Image 1 (cartoon, rainbow, N blue to C red):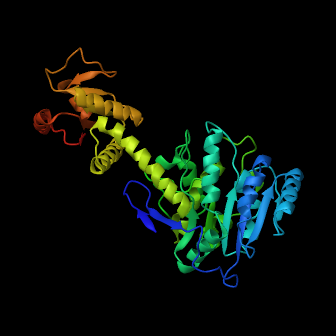
Image 2 (image 1 turned 135 degrees about the vertical axis):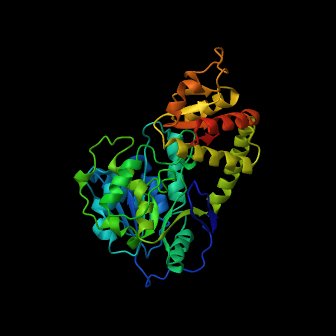
Image 3 (image 1 turned 45 degrees about the vertical axis):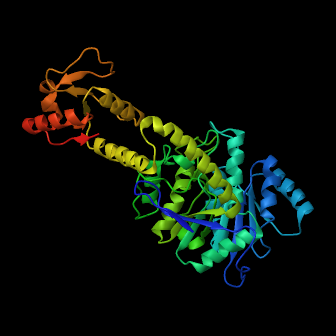
Length: 410
């Protein structure tokens, strides 16, 4: 187990478990375990059933589908594979995998101590087929890779009372990029709203990663009690076509880990050891590529990268306090700051320069004010000082004289 800790990013455990060896076989007398899968795409039946065959015989399997045709296709393929029993449930075509979890299977889930929930996935929005294939393999390979891997997951739950939720790593591909973003999309507000409805008391911070990003996980059932105890109905979910973002489905995906933490359990990322080894090489190559680009921004090592990240976080925090923002300094550093703010979607009202230093040939997209023109406004707004060391020293003295003491040094 390794731990990833950063005050402005996610903070959770990462478990890498063997997919070829297990410490001990799961003792069926200790607890009840089931795997729940929602399958929608006919072309993915073979892919999904191949993984479901890895489930040990003492663990129950439930599959939800939306049609008799899909049920028959699965039964036909299962008959050619093994004698293992699969329970197939037909559900309404509304709510997708989320309603499978919370409506079609909710009562059944309550009978088990540990469950795995997983689903197939199709192309939507800007995602490419290649991206979806990466996402599918990431989910299924890190939850149901092998019988030994599954035994190791259940044993880990048994060994550590605090672990409540295992999720696969966040996905990234040619287009999708959840692994390197905050994961919120346009869903922070609806997650907070849902949190209030579920009576969660945990703080949900927008400046941290949203943790879970899909309904693919292993969990101790009690860790999601607040979600399972709500009386969900199919009409709680939007009709098809489902919006690409901002729906109740997207909120539930992101609130899973908060429900778990609210219940006093730990959330952890789960990887099998084969995937983790390959991921190390991929991440190393991506980091090398990134630093080749970072060097053009004077970032050549980890300390500088962390410092730059902290600087941006503090800048964002400062600007939230003000409805109007000005940048003191219209030179190279001021322009650099304005570009960064634009990328952060933070609007400025203009640049400020010391009296007698206004130049008309500076290429900026905002007005430039001399300090005497706007100093009264600056006392009621945000001011970012973007200057070189020499000018910074002089300007700080001027601001003291003018009684302006609330500013941020870029």
